Length: 260
Image (tube, rainbow, N blue to C red):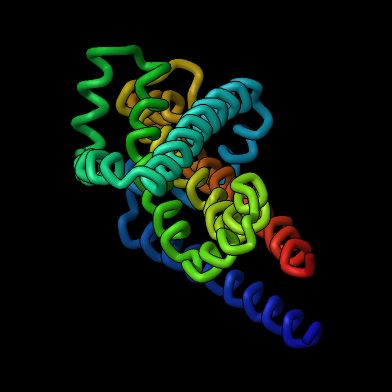
């Protein structure tokens, strides 16, 4: 079993490296075909700018503020989605009321929403609001699917044996629902960061990754713009990988509850 897992991990690493080499080759070929540094900067210059970014305090301050906005937007979206999903599970009229609202939120054009929110708020708050509008429907729908997927016979058996609601919550609902929900936190955080940075670019938010990108574009500093883009991708991948590890703890929790 362990040998199969290790061999699978080796293949995953190998294919990941091949993907990186392929993207690098496409960049190099495209650079020499276009032959215009104002359209596509060279790989070498971009790497130099990326290294310089990591050495600048301005970059880390901007990255910190963008991450803070991402965490704030995700936290609000997650808490609000859990509360609404719980209400939808116990109150069907509430579910019928909120489902059309969720459908409307899914179809909202992000760019238009940013422009409207900028009128009502400021450049520092607008990225958070826009990210909530993107993440909240996604998380709410996922939690609803997880709750609906719980075996009804298990709930009926809990009622027959008169298991308290508190025990049902911690012994049945949370262990069954948590792995699927928490395993997507990394992807949601990565998506949230992408939306936040996009909103920051349009808002030209001060002290933000998007603001740095907007300044680089304005002054035609294409290697810096490409380096900031790569840095954003690396941060997003780190968030995705880091937060995806939560699912390991929830699977252990489910196993302990199952043995009990």
